[in-house]
Amino acid sequence: MAGKKKLIRLPALLLALCLALLLTGAVAFAAGTTEISVSVSLWEDEDNAYETRPESVRIVLTVNGEDSQTAVELTEAGGWSHTFRDLPKYDGEGKEIVYGVREEEPFDYEASVGGDAAAGFVITNTFVPVEIPDEPVPLGVNNKVANLPRTGGAADPMLWIASGTAALAALVVLMLVRRKKVGN
Image (cartoon, rainbow, N blue to C red; front, side):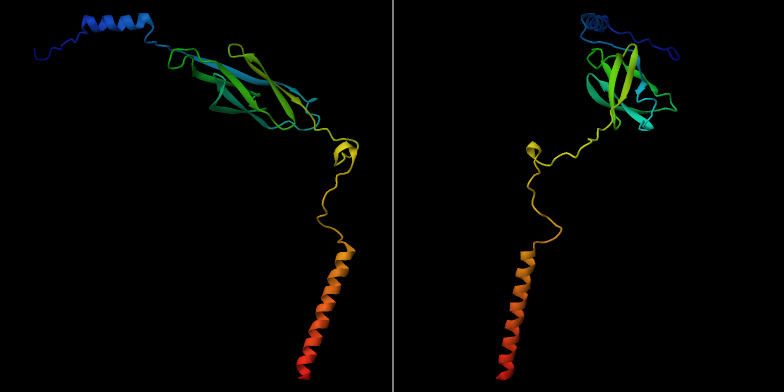
């Protein structure tokens, strides 16, 4: 027997148990990966007329509606596109994972996501300029100027007069006290 390899055989009972678990769905071997593509293909900003288009945008991959830890920066040099590769198709319970994307909106833009995981997601960024009113906006309610406390600027003249009078009175009292001490 020396030099011969022994074959180890699974008992028929163990083999039958494994087969029963697989057939009843108690154990799922959900294999496979998927790819999700995303592109920012539309910039509705009059061909960047206001020079507000960012150099990059951050895209977050969502898993079953929740943000994941996976994110990517898209740039013009990279064609404003990316493909998330080797993503698991199924979770630990054998359920198919629903993927999506979310853009962290650039300043002065609104993002809308179209498409789906199978065909790829397309993000459109629309320029939304900040509107500056022609007329100054009143501070108060019903177009009345609000009664705000005075916090600086020119002081009340009565305050200066009262302070000067108090200082002068203190000086007179000090001179009288000193005279009285010198005279004694």
